[in-house]
Image (cartoon, rainbow, N blue to C red; front, side, top):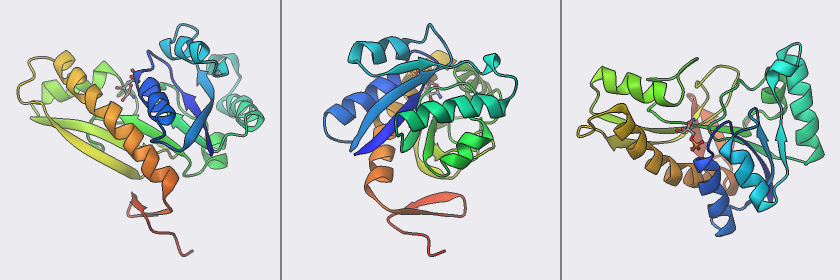
Length: 210
Ligand code: GRF
């Protein structure tokens, strides 16, 4: 069974949807630790209610990203974590963690990357930018994490019609409902199949020959 660490900074609705899909037997995994940078995160409360070990690690407490990464790696190794699932985690994953878990860190972004992504583009800011652009579709992207913000190989994307959305909040609500479906689907695909990476896309069902 794949051992997962979930990283979350906020309310944790994606974490909850993943957790429930694991319990239902849809995703072959176990959440062995929840890591947050915020004491107040709803995700932390949910983890504690479920008896999942939960840790708060604040990057500000470390002199540099490398030391922050070493602390994260210590926790990940202690819990024998195989995969890292970012579910509304607002801090950058340090390079030493990305290297140690190459192609085993996955993130969800509430828009169709590469549009409306990158540093500073998170949460409502994304939906505000989409709304301001006049776009009639938005969507969800699940991607592997590399050392650049929102730029790793794409696993799955799904479009959402937002032409009737009168506000960024209305877009957020529609997109979130799709996130709760797409993230479990993507995790199931990644954990149950071999995959390779070609042209910055994750190709499910094929192995790298190199
Ligand atoms: C989601 O929209 C996710 O795509 C983004 O942050 C939000 C987190 O929501 N990265 P939640 O904490 O999972 O409810």
